[in-house]
Length: 207
Ligand code: 5GP
Image (tube, rainbow, N blue to C red; front, side, top):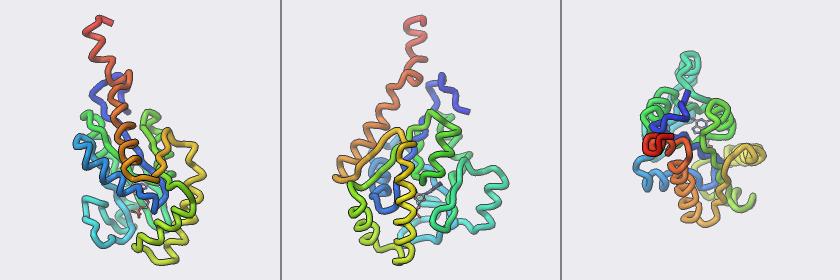
């Protein structure tokens, strides 16, 4: 477990939101800007898309390998999403936060719920486009999935948006640059939290 009084503990930053929200673009840009923030590379049974790199975007595994990871308790959370399995490798994340590094998880709502249950101090954000019509448009224009997959992802999006109340922050991705800077400011404020700063002051003020 994280020790909230240890100012060397890093922060778990969770970003969720239906596919087609521009979430990946936001996440990539935030990671480019915040050099001290690392990304949690998930394991998935989904086929590799063009342009994706093994070990950078995902660890692409078989269903059997994924099941093995669950059985060995190697996943911090996992979920099925539109017929594929996704999970966060436990060790990589815990090693980073134990070493004071902030880590960003780009995961869907069931996974986010599991993380928040285990780590209530995790900071969770939900990214949505400004309207349902805009979400449909972005998903179709992305052009990476079949029409059948798009329909499935839209259905999934509806049930994901219904979970928005579980999140700490909402990012409306209308103007991309604004959404990116909102995410960056939320992450930045985590360093000013009481638990992060109090240890330094305890000695200085003999508290
Ligand atoms: P995609 O197939 O478009 O890369 O991802 C589909 C969904 O799975 C996205 O909402 C993404 O955030 C989510 N996802 C990616 N990795 C994980 C993970 O490790 N755990 C969970 N629960 N969801 C994940």
